[in-house]
Image (tube, rainbow, N blue to C red; front, side):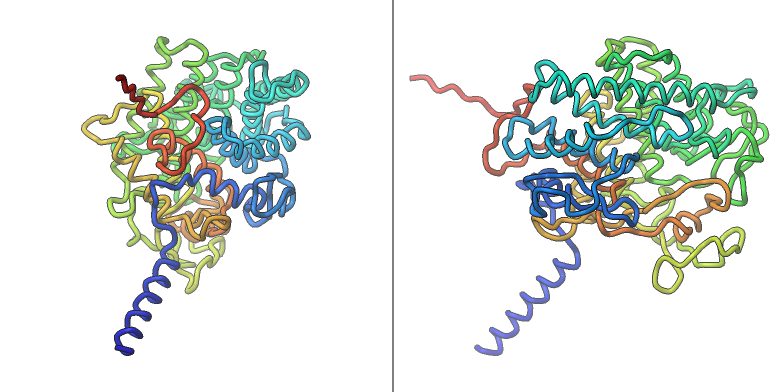
Length: 494
């Protein structure tokens, strides 16, 4: 009997150890958006630096346990994710501290108002959520704060105008003309990332009635230019970047297509990066939402953007990992694709060891998986995607994607959750050549397991969309804001 008891105890111990290594098992009764915010709002990572926002609800205390977040796009993405969750749960008392922390931070900052970096301008999006809380009729109506938010939105619009005047492609006689450089030092390059950072921001500014010389036509110029140069119809995916000038990119690892009529001839990168496609599909959904808000749902341009969304959604779902429901760092490969230091396309020392042994294989990556899943769920909720598109079950893929995110990337327990397996960064140009080896062992693509902001923000965006579609069946909560009750109402009469 003692031997049997000992074996049983050891079996339980082994099982527990296995579960600890594996991480969290998805539980449909858990509101993961709330749990992760309360665990991580005051302390997460911006690359390797600590960052945080104040949050009285946090287990880490009433003030930031990390350095207060600086003003750049990574904190902006985290803040937007938190504000998206707050907007849905704002009638719950436990969500109030999130808004208070984010508004305190945002109202102490000044938005960027010059061009040169679409990434820097993107942080302006924080003011949409804060404004919604303090505007007339908002949860925390405050005219002074609302005016400040609108002023900062105006600064963001000024920055886009400046960027448009200084950093736009010209002279190609193609759809690329008018396209915005991603950054001033990446001349004539358009990146997938830039669609989320720049024109999606412009669409939202226009929908909020911000005064600017830029128009909806400028939004369409950006998406037509980027789609024309990045969409690979055979793979049904987007390359990370293109350049209309071979001197501004196109190191080994890029593909030169002199007869590429859509961009007037030039280079495009050779790989399909998960997070880049994630930024782009989220941008498409956000732009459609902004167009609808502005009363443009019946415009021809709306159908163009929706067409891009449907094509990209189908292509991405075809690349979803069947076992986990998630997406790989490099979308066109599985984990049999590996890179070893010194064996990249150039053989240069640019590629440094970021894992034991100097070899890194393709891996399921959290930030891209979260962006793709969140965009699919939001597109379904708003009716921009059908449950099934071109014979592909988008609804099932989105549901499996979110549950896979929890099972694959969320570790720890309530109060200490972490988002793991995110690529710290990736770029193109100079000595970052965009080869498969670069995305796996490049000098700035280390894998982070500590809730890096580019994974944390998108996780929250995906989580709240999932919870809208499949409300956790835990303890009763106040009905979410926006009149979106999903309750079953029953009337019993005598």
